[in-house]
Length: 215
Image (cartoon, rainbow, N blue to C red; front, side, top):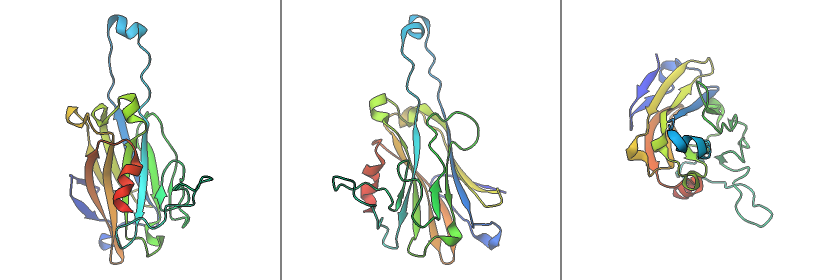
């Protein structure tokens, strides 16, 4: 039976060998609060831009840092492509052990809106933990925040499609300033792994601002 986590709680993914960690799906889902307009405002106002929530993963070494920021771009600037950050412009890690399945730009539909797949049993030993971040793309410019998001969740599902754990969070007016969130992390523990719910919101809508804490 899947474990329902609260902020700060964790669970041992490898407990008694019950789950198959050869391929773990970290699924993220959310709904957007419907904004109802009345009268002339409904007739003449422009359609609001879709909420585009992006799932990002930082792979950290034993020092708690991201070792590789990828190859430099044509101007010599850090591109993050091909490094230890998985995001919409670099969807597959060079190890082949972690990848983003796609970029859902609306949050429409049931189930996971975005998924990051991790072969935990095969992840190279130099990686000690993975931080999972969610950011609203251009949230500041579009006037969007987690205050407009409801039924958000992150869950871990094993290779046999068994849900191991889930962390739910719904935004309200207290989240109106926040456009990104450090959602959860998995940590290597001996020969196994643990999953911890974090749920720390941030005002920035740029995941690279959060990445600075790990370089």
